[in-house]
Image (cartoon, rainbow, N blue to C red; front, side, top):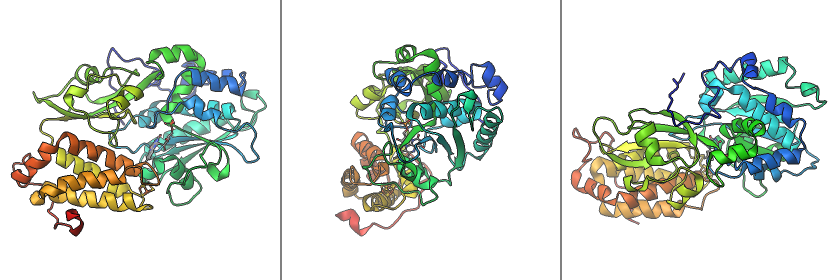
Length: 444
Ligand SMILES: Cc1cc2nc3c(=O)[nH]c(=O)nc-3n(C[C@H](O)[C@H](O)[C@H](O)COP(=O)(O)O)c2cc1C
Ligand code: SF4
């Protein structure tokens, strides 16, 4: 179980019940639990959607799409049942926030799914939790059972005459099933590979029915919006970036942890003030601002607000909120290799640019880091990554390519130093990675 950290600048909304015993239903009720859904039961679906739209809540799963807007795409009338899915697959390296919500406030997620279901006219929800989070699945299953036992779920919820079922579903350990359409395939009992879009899930989703899928943090934010009001929530953040965000601070930091801060909080402050700065007298070398798929920032680029638009302007992304800080002892080539190992392993193999591209990149980076690099490899790594961009069925290919392009662009000199350094200038005892033979395609 993760221990909780705290800082005076924190604005606790999603995390306000952390450490308060809110996994127990009675305690959750004492802490205003299930009040928002009872309020939502008195509202028209469009009024719920408008409230969420006006709050400027944007998806916390990575893409930052407007949640209210997403809900508004679901058709009012549908011959097929509609569904609400909570994406709790959380597997992006550097991201460890949804687990805290499941651990400390599972009913908030249930309540968020309920409100989304009322907004789009669905009677069925699923909470899909990453397979490795087995201990959290137990917490969630208990919370669901308690909500059923109290009549909050099932038939005639809160005596409203409406029926609503929510089920837990566990993943089997693939990062790819966090991608929304692959998650639906997985829920349907099939291999977790993505679907071609259009059609989009809001129209044709789970079992062909209109489907809303949102990240666990997104959904856990919704009850607070319904109770506190759109204006209050929007004003916590910056324009078009409402509310707060759980920032997962990891890497070489004095005080790593998950901190909840307003959207738009300054990244430099987040590193040096909130997270205690770089320990052991070392210097900052680079920051991965939003999970492993987001392009790296250099020290002179970190004086920026942490919101979706500012990060995009800086050539990166806010992504899933996983901030990974690297000090000057980090070998960027090795870091790029470690990142690529993950994406190669997690590629579902369905499309060639991703399946072959991640494999080539991993092999080339391995050889390069181990001292067998050729000068032309540097351009090849760049060329290969650029040719994966936008050419894959799902964004996992982009997620592998984007950080790699940034590593080469911003740390080219360090790649060149590896040619001199043989094998790695950062490893006194020699490279920790086995050298591989030069691949025939590396000269292309
Ligand atoms: C490879 C891949 C993995 C993803 N993993 C997750 C995940 O673990 N959790 C998540 O919420 N979104 C994940 N996403 C994003 C989802 O596809 C989707 O955009 C998100 O669940 C929408 O919720 P939101 O609008 O609340 O952010 C992933 C996307 C890709 C391409
Ligand atoms: S991009 Fe990768 S993960 Fe996505 S469909 Fe293609 S092979 Fe699978």
